[in-house]
Image (cartoon, rainbow, N blue to C red; front, side, top):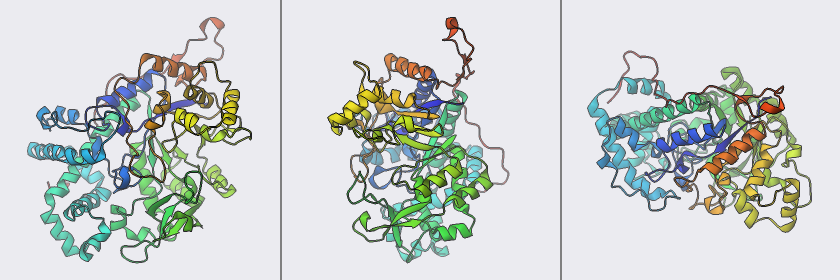
Length: 535
């Protein structure tokens, strides 16, 4: 039996001097915190670029990384920046919030300096290997972003017809006139993945697994829609026939109107689901475990006619079902996937999930209504699940308790969890998932810090105040470390070997797995010969 635990904390929420979390020292410190408190997993949100609403679930690419996470101190160590390039820049006045509009303006000039020096240094061997290994997405993405910038950031479907259609002569001209911009995007992607891979190696060397997150859909304003429209339901060159959302639910009376294009699953099946196999393969180059968002959408999905005013106008449509995952398993083998199986569940969705063998998710906040039993209460859990008090889409534990529960719910919660005198609600709820039979228990960093709803990461169906929360520097103190370690050891979730024959005198002794304390070094791919480049 393997019982583990971890912490959900996105890169953007890490503390640091650059207005948003990065792959710099605070990320390494967070790994050290996870190791010290005997965690196994660090769960993050999508690493992809952010676009509409600053959401990582609305990205310009399913593969490219968010260059906001590139750390300038590490670039300085590589000789690509000097301190004067960034030390006097204002990245924001509130250390607890990301100011996306500000960092959008101030970060590009700094990275342009780094790219200029990278080209001047002329040491391209590792870059060439990266370019070759990632050319299937890197070239299209770099061209897409460069052309988009030449159109003042307009969505691709507002460009002129020749650019929309990627006409050969037009693309040839862009590659000549926009070569500097194209190289900028290629090099910054190289820097992103170099820094991330160093961080991931450090985590893995210290026995911390990265749990990544991939959205089920891509954005309409994305390189995938522009370069490979055949994979989507389109009624003409620029308009989808349907877009994604969810039906009316507890989050919204009108449902959630996402607006993402819908896949042409029939076409994908005819091509052996090659795009999805590629996407999962690339994801497991980045992560140790992958959480697939909106898993139920593979069995059936809510599609809304394009142009509708509300998601309530949609309908359920059958998806590829288990057939997709059979193709993925046949191509890639057994994969460590967590199925985000929240929302409206049917027996067909449950059967599909169970057939894949992937663990589903349990949300303890959903379990308390004051009087009825619930599948979200721990006595109904099964081992093959990942237990959460809440996710990035939910209120914090404290905020939920203070803002939405009634007395009956509070009485039920206090009694069910045998809440101790003086025990914070976040502590009681975390104890609830830690003590459950779920193989995985994942705590949000906000709940470990007992923060209210001002620290909420995302409120579905709203735009303008999401994805902003950042942890203050120094927020992780010794009492927090001690309480999390105790919780982890007490419920046997520590990554160590427990001897059930221990005597009473040595019941606190565990044999810990050996871990390296050395920060990871970047290990490039094997040498490649005769790789062409336009740098």
